Image 1 (cartoon, rainbow, N blue to C red):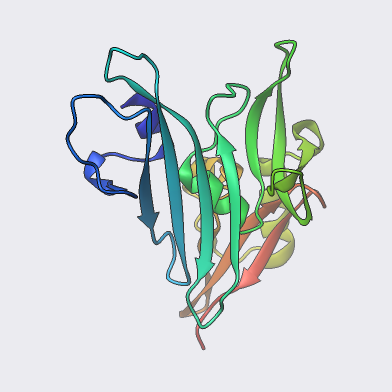
Image 2 (cartoon, rainbow, N blue to C red):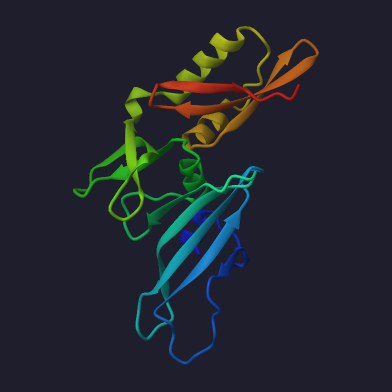
Amino acid sequence: MEILERLGITDCKQLAPVEPIEYCEKAPKSFRMVYRNFFDAKSIFTATLFFSQLHDKLHIYGIRKYDASVRWIDNDPSERLHSFPLIDKRIFFSFKEAYNLLQGRCVLKRHVTRTGREYLAWTQLDFEYIDSKGNYCWMEYPKRGFNVRVALRTALWAEFGRRRLDLTRLDNLVKSLEQGNLEVIPVQYGTRTKFFSIEANPKDRRIKLTDCSIS
């Protein structure tokens, strides 16, 4: 269950078999389970997990990889699909992080090279290039070149000046942006409150601000 919890699954009932699982004396060598979630109202996230038997005589299975996809709902037939291996221990993405990557955002992750050296880097999918396995290619940006906390304070001050900002949860905002999440913050304009979405942009070393208020 540990790896399922790291992926973001809190209950096995969130998984459904891709093929019907029938009882038999000999355990299947492999099987697939599917997970679906609406992380927002505009798209649906689907992950297909590939289980493989780890021992011939024991019913013990491990997750070899999962294929993640994002499909937009509003009459948009486009879909993005990428495979995330779980056997490779050098990097691990949860379902929410995979969703953020497929949305085009960046995720700060701890990487491990083949020689065992660890380093932090922002990771992003390059939707213009496909590798030999049909997956999007990766782009990396060094952590040392982009400090989220400093960039967030600078962007908010430059955009809103002395307007009252709710920065009581700054630490949580920074952590969320590092996970690739799109956050929404309220800004007070007299008696009105406007809402702005924020996301990390390590490629340009800045915070992207978008007015998402409803007029």
